[in-house]
Length: 130
Image (cartoon, rainbow, N blue to C red; front, top):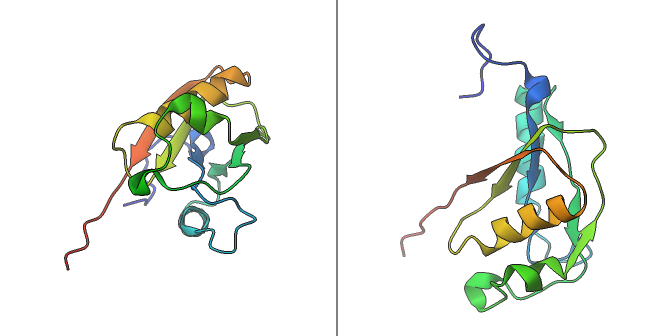
């Protein structure tokens, strides 16, 4: 899992963020799962660098419910908060990749706001059987 071995690189090279949720952080139904996940990771690896350079202005309909899947449309709802550190590489976490529109929008938005480092996407999903 996330246990340090003598062959692993230093945590100082691990910079993590997440693609913004479809809900604005001002929305009462905002989902804090990424923040919760990252808090757990920080308990295991306190030297990780967690950054939140991008937020949504407004709540939008989730893509899986017919919301936007066009990167240009998605980017129009982003707010640039910026990085606290200069980063050579950032890992972007998202809950699922379907069309790649949100990942593409995030990558383009970071680049348009001056980020020049490497970007790596990490995606997960789950199936709920009913």
